[in-house]
Length: 113
Image (cartoon, rainbow, N blue to C red; front, side, top):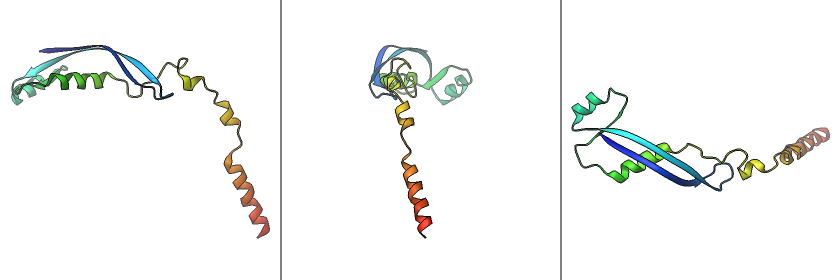
C-alpha cells in the first residue's frame, strides 16, 4: 500500500472574475499496489484505489493526478468576496434591447409595402 498526501495551496483563476484564487489542498489517498493483472482484478473489487506496480512508478505523475482530482471543477471566490459579484448587474437589465429598434424598422417596412 502507498499513502499519498498533499497539503498546501494552489493558485488558480476564479471563473467569475478571472482573478487569482488560492485553493487549499488537503488530500490523503491510499493506493493499493498490484503485482500483475490477476492481482489487480482481485483487489479491484474493494472500494480502494488499485494501481498496477509491475514497473517502477512515476511519483510525480501520481502526485499530479491526485492534485488534479482534488481541484474543484469551476473554482470561484465566495459570493461576497468575488469582484464580479460586487459589480451591478441591474444596469444591463435596464438598457433597451438592441432588437427593439430592429422590430420598429421591420414594422415600418411593412407599412410602406
